[in-house]
Image 1 (tube, rainbow, N blue to C red):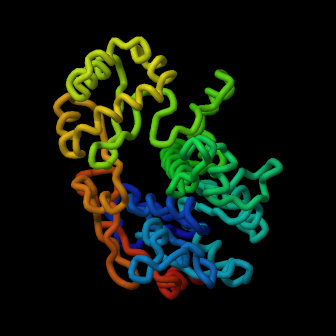
Image 2: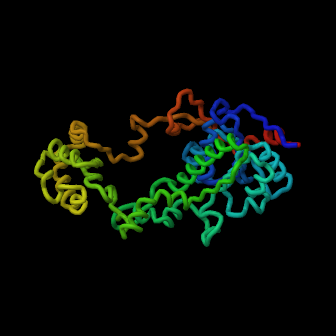
Image 3: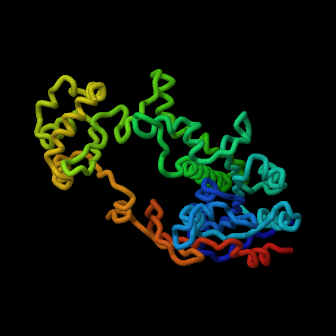
Amino acid sequence: MPHEKQILPHPGSDGPLSNIIVVALEQAVAAPWCSSRLADAGARVIKIERPEGDFARHYDHVAHGESAYFVWINRGKESLVLDIKQPEDATLLHRIIARADVFIQNLAPGAAERAGFGSDELRRRHPRLITCDISGYGDSGPCRDMKAYDLLIQCETGLASITGAPERPGRVGVSIADIACGMYAHAAILQALYERERTGHGTGLAVSLFDALADWMTVPLLHQDYGGKAPERVGLNHPTIAPYGAYPAGDGREVVISIQNEREWQDLCDRVLERPDLATDARFSSNPNRVANRAALDAEIVGEFARFGHSALIHRLQAARIAFGSVNGVAELSHHPHLRRTEVGTPTGPVRCVAPPVVSPGRHPLGSVPALGEHNDALRREFGT
């Protein structure tokens, strides 16, 4: 007889996924990002860690001894240390999966299957189970067994080739491939849970870092395939819209402006630059012309912006209703008036983190980050024979 699922109280027990048990055989970023957002919504997430722990625990120690990455994407989970190559631990994991709704894993390709936790077999044994396999390049093809970390995927998908200053490629400064993959996995799992409500059956999902970031590269790829040329690197400028980029004020602080149509271009010339002649200059009379003559356009804007300090320039842009943003550093983000924060408990004390982006009435507090093996005894008692 199948085990009856038991739901124990946990920090997110009042959330919309409070009746869902997730088993996450996970490490690094992509899978933990996905499961942490399920935990935010109230799911009970049981994180399976090797004896030395998820290696993301040791990326750094900046949050009073805790890894910034680990704190960010492992809140609200229970940590269970298992060596799944040992029969006793493998048996325990099978017992837990038998009562789970979702199984997520991002081990090396084929590793979960070799250990007896292949998704197809798990769903055969548990038809309501939803499985999600996260990999670098998918389960087939010549790159299947290549190690796939975020920067490697940024390079393989061509993202680095369109990022950075004109003179050389650049890395997006956050783990964008991992985040994209985790977001797609999260959305797919929610869809699968909804589908199960109608059909009664789980499904198998597979998401790769490469596929996730390749999807985000669709616009540059279409330019390459149908226009014969991918967008060039233009630093803090838009490759196909002008003026849309960063310009220094007279005090040296940069401001990004964005002109989306000819009315806004006219307003910029008249009310900010005080140069109505630029609006009728044939070189700048349309967006394609402005892009073709970007160097001359930028020279005109830089010359006029130099007359104003940052604050005065911002005031003029606001008055003219021109879209703008300041080129802030992380220090400025830390004090930004729109930055919402929340507190997350960790084994060494609370950490102030960015609050979840989605604002929802009655949102419950976020769960704490577990110590390695913190829930070993409780989980072994609960799921033991």
